[in-house]
Amino acid sequence: MRQIVLDTETTGIDIKLGNRIIEIGCVEVIDRRLTGNSYHQYINPQRDSEEGALEVHGITTAFLADKPLFTDIVDDFLNFIRGAELVIHNAPFDVGFINHELSLLNQQQNHIANICRVLDTLVLAKKMHPGQKNNLDALCKRYDIDNSQRDLHGALLDAEILADTYLAMTGGQTALLLGGSADGESRDAAASLPRNVTLDTGKLKVIKASNDELAAHDSRLQSINEMTEGKCIWLSGKN
Image (cartoon, rainbow, N blue to C red; front, side):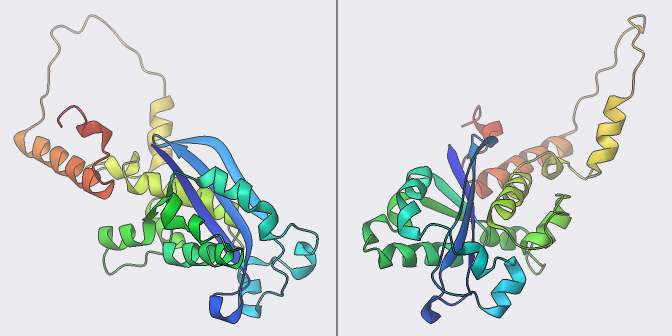
């Protein structure tokens, strides 16, 4: 399964006020593994960013002056995402802006719904954590994802952070702990300690999972399967 984790930056939040895309960042995930393949492009919107947007991303008009127009990069961008499942946080915002840019070029046939599937991680997070903050910063804190470099929003950096967060949300190591510690550093440190192994230990004691533990494990797998729309690899042998 090929997924593209995508984020954009724009000159403002309202398309009706003539706001445009100024940056697109994408990272590729295949079979739940980051491939290292990415797409990143700054775009000249031919207008200034609104003050509020500039405070968020810090990308100035002067910086964008020599960057290509959307029409110059549209083919490469569409070729990169075509046929994949897009993973986006608050998808209606980014998809709306991309479709708007395509409409300005009379490319309605390439509207996102016609070439890609879309998974909205904000909708997913609200289902998993109802009543809690579910913006990207809150999710990073909840899933112990390092976002210390995120002083300003940037499309590629945010896409990379979202990829790590999405994988953790949908079955990463931390998400699979059944009531255990989520302290990744402690686990890594403990795993790195040398252990003395002796073969003269007598008969090994086999500790089997209890019925309650097996039920909890199965319930967790079913939950992951629902969140990933039937793509839980650990259930593949049972289906």
